[in-house]
Image (cartoon, rainbow, N blue to C red):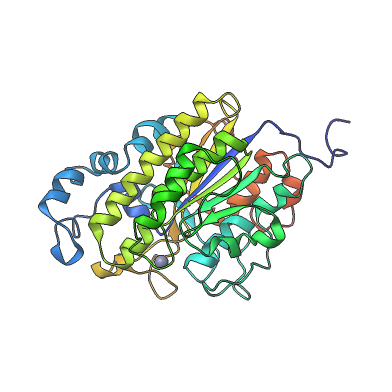
Length: 351
Ligand SMILES: [Zn+2]
C-alpha cells in the first residue's frame, strides 16, 4: 500500500517559503495607491509620491506599486481577495490585530480565548513550523525571520526548536558569511524608528543568507514595515514599504530558481495578518475589532504546487486559517492538520 500506512513525510524534496506582510490592505494590493491619501500632506502624501505611484487606472496603479506581483505572479500563480470580483479572504479570529493574526496563519486555528493580546507570551498553540521541525525528515530544516520582536513567542522558539531571527537580533553562529557580518555591523548603526520592529531589509537578507547556507525546506519571512508606517499615518513610507516587499519577493523567487536545491521544487504562499479601515479615510491607519473591514485580507501563491489561475475572479471564500493546512499538504503531511478547522486550499486544482 502506497498511502495510509506511511506516517512520515511524503514530499521530502518540497520547499515552501511563507511570507507575511503586516497589515497591508487588499485595497492597495488590487487597486494600487489610494486617491484620497496619495497627495494629502496630513498623511505625508505629496506630488512626488503621486508621480511615483499614481496612474489613471487601478491596473496600472497596482503594477506601479507591486510590479513583480502583477507582472509575474499574476501570470504564474494565483492572487485571491479582490472583493470587487467576488473573491474573498477573511480572518476567522475576532481580534484583527497581529499576534492573533499570526497565530491563525501559523497554527491554522483562531484562539480568541487565549490569544487576545500582543504580549510576549509563548504561544500555547503549535505552528506549522513546529510541526514540521518535529518530523524526522525536516528537523533542523525550518527557520523563521521577522521584523517584530514578538515572533520568538508566537513561534514558541523555546518549545518548537525553530530558530527565530526577529526584532533586533543579529545573525549567530561560527561561520558567518560576509553579508551576515556586514548586516550585523550596520543593524545597530541604523536606528529603527520603531521600538519593537526593525527594517524589513535585515529580515530579508538574513533569511537569504540562511537559505544559501542551511537550505531550509520551510522558511518563514515576516515583513512588518507596512503596518508600523501606517500606524504613524505615513502613507508615503507605507507605499514604499509595499514596493520594497515586492522587490524582496522577486529577489527570493530569483534566488530559488538559481539554486538547484530550490529550483522547481519551491512554492510560495504570501498572506497578511489583518486588514485596515477605509472609512472615514483616516481609518486606514487603524485596525482591530472596532475597525470595519480590518478582517478582510488576501492571499497569494505561486510555485511548483500552484497552477496558474492569475487573479481570482470567481465567487469564493477563503480564510487565513487555511494557510497552515495548505503548507502541511504541500509537504505530504496533511494528516498532521486533520484536526484543524480549515481545509487545505487546492491551489493545484486545474479547472
Ligand atoms: Zn498594527
